Image (cartoon, rainbow, N blue to C red; front, side, top):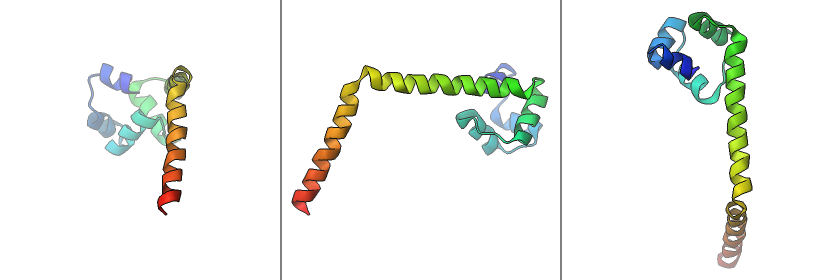
Length: 98
């Protein structure tokens, strides 16, 4: 949705105004992809696209984000190991001190 908005040269506030939704709703949809059916209908109408096109784009972004997160842990098992080790050390210190 952000791409559609910026391609039209619109600010988030302008999109909110033409869709009759709040600025916060526009920000939430762009950041998290969460939108009610009414919001999707309004956005699709303003952008002159089908609702399915908006949801498909959001799903693709979500898949890419999930893949990159999994890739980060696969590439850096040391990160996971250090987090687990840190938790154990912290628990041990609390046990000794407390």
